[in-house]
Length: 137
Image (cartoon, rainbow, N blue to C red; front, top):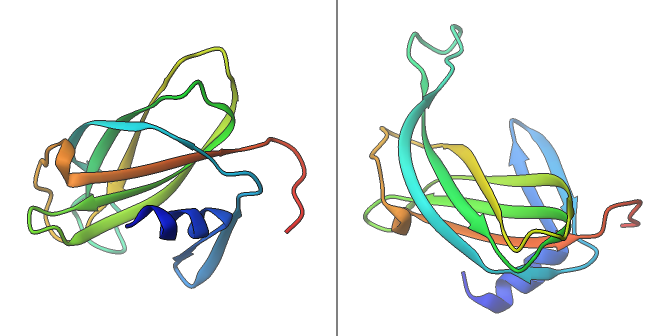
């Protein structure tokens, strides 16, 4: 995703999940540097109504730099070795104090197909901060 499209998308991110619409409004876009540390295959707890196995996922471990303050909002995408997106999620954290130079995060991302124990190159993570408190959309 080019940086201009990400900046436009930072103002208003939308994730369609199970027929419901989850909207995250970013009132202030302070982009942060991100380093993906690892992508490791895992299984989420299964839903017996869907089958008897866990849900395939890739655990994405990353570090958000730039002395973040406020709430961190990240778009996490997992790509297979062919560069096709096989999973994505939006992650938010609670308020950061701004005293730390970086914050380590880890999140499982459900993937389509089998797990593949990717490398750091198999994830794209883009993060920004927004002020904590009431926002008007």
